[in-house]
Structure formats: structure tokens, C-alpha cells
Image (cartoon, rainbow, N blue to C red; front, side):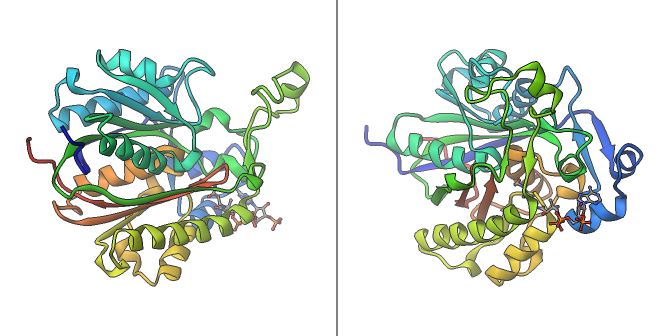
Length: 335
Ligand code: UT7
């Protein structure tokens, strides 16, 4: 049988931790204010994982909802990808834990690390697997407990992030649905613009390094901001052109939810009105890889997307990494 040319998005799910931390709560602990956080980022609150809400727990919940919504048999799922930079363990892959939790006996499973661009990377790779014929029903989950990497004494980073997971089911179809065009990019020279230096093979954790709090993330926010706007705009324009479209055809842009000012700058540079951009970072903060699928989930659940709509997903993150996908929304017809 020849491989089907498209991978439709058939189901979607999300999960966030129970605990909500407001800006006011942070302002009682560190030298910051609700006014600063809202005006510089657009964030009002974020969900923060408790000890029993590690990455595979959130990923499993989001994956389960996506599978139920898609209505696919568990035996049909042949691939599980978990996009994360905060795995349960350094080894083995969190995707294997999720495959076990969900009871998917016929699925291969692997993790994908592309920081905040993880979902867009995963959607590009997952679509490629389906289009090649290697996979027919694929579960893509993007999940991060980024607060695990946060130094709660560092006001430059701790106000920005939250935890969560989002998932989609991709299924082979001959209908022109799912990703129509995509690209992924990286600029490794920027690896230390945002990083966790200690805890890997390059600099294993030692008591002295832990004492210096080097196991936590640091970030050069202003530089990242500029690269984010340029990276997302250039990759978005390329994806739209590669799909044979122009930006006017895009019904909704679902961007990475890092900072409202970044999204506004992208809108301005692409000459698109802000009403065309879906924004929910006020309630979740930056949930790293999970931010795009959580936003896509809410856009779908709130009725912003109907079958046939063209959606542009664009993201940017540590690495540096970036990527964009043009998606035609709609369920695959049974084959
Ligand atoms: O997911 C992808 C990766 N990350 C990003 O996308 C982040 C991209 N960058 C950003 O979103 C912004 O650069 C930030 C929100 C991180 C910072 O906003 P900014 O407008 O670039 O502020 P800044 O870094 O230039 O800092 C301005 C001031 C500084 O004080 P001085 O040096 O001007 O006196 C900071 O110390 O704001 C201070 N500041 C804070 N003040 C109150 C930094 N963090 C805080 C805080 N509360 N939480």
C-alpha cells in the first residue's frame, strides 16, 4: 500500500497541575510585583506541579484525553513521542513510561528534546513518520515540569514559567489535513543564552555546584526576546509560503506563550492583527514545550477552530531552537 500523504490531527488533550500560584503570592516571597510581571510579560498566574505531578503524570493525563477524543483503539497506536526537556529521569525515556501508563502495546516510544519548540518539532517529525508510512496512528505529547529547573530565589526566571502537558493524535489520511508545511531550525551558538549547566555529562552535579545553585536555569532574557521574534517570524513566513499560501489565509496563529510582548512584536512584524493570535499565557505562564498544544487545545475547545481552518503554529526556545507548522484543521475520514 502506498503511504498516505497527510497526517490529520484527530484528538487533543491537556493537563496542568492542581496548584495555582498567583503573581501576588510570588511578590510575597521575592522582590517583584504583580504590576511588573503583568506589564512585562502578560502573566497573571501559573500552575506549579506538586511532588506527585511529575512529567509522565501530566503527559499521561493529556495523552489519555487526546486518545479518548480521537476514539482510536489503544492497539492502533504505533508511536508515542514525548517532547520534553524535563524528563522523569535522565534515563530511560519518559515516553516509555507514558506508553506503559496508557497501555499501548504496539507502540514504539521516544523522547524529543527541543525545549519550548518541542511540540512544533514533534509535529513536524510525527507528520514525517506518518507520511513515510512508518506510522499510521501516532500520539504526540509535549510535557514539561519546567518549575523543576527554577531557582525560586531568581526573580529573572521564576515569575515566567509554569507546568503542563498537551497532546494530539495524528492519523494517516488521504484528505488534505494536518500539517501542510513545516520547518524546524536551530542556532547552537546560542546554547548558553538559556541553559541549565549542571547535572549532565558535561558538568555532573557535585555538592559544591549544587551549593552554588548551578542546577537551575539561567537566561539572557533581552537577547532571547530579539531572537524569538526574528526566529518565529522568519520560520512562520517560510512555512506559509511552502504551503503555497499567504498570511491572509491563516485563520488563527497559535504562538509559543512566553511573553505577550513577544507575541505582539510577532504580530506587528507579520502585519497581522492581534485578534488573529490565540493567547492564554495570562493563566499558564510559559509552559515550555506544552505551551503550543495547551493553547491549541483551548482554541479548539472554545470554538475558535472549525474543520478546514488554516492554523499557524510557531515556537521558539532554548538551544536555540524554533519552528513553524501550517495546519489544516479537521478530522480524518475513516479509511
Ligand atoms: O520560552 C522561550 C525562552 N524565554 C523567553 O522567551 C524569554 C524572553 N525574554 C523576556 O520575556 C523578557 O526579556 C523578560 C520578561 C525575561 C524580561 O523583560 P525585559 O523587559 O527584557 O526586562 P529586563 O531583563 O531588561 O529587566 C528590566 C529590569 C531589570 O532591572 P534594572 O537592571 O533595569 O534595574 C531587572 O532586574 O527589571 C528587573 N527585573 C524584575 N523586576 C521585578 C527582572 N525580573 C524582575 C521581576 N520583578 N520578576
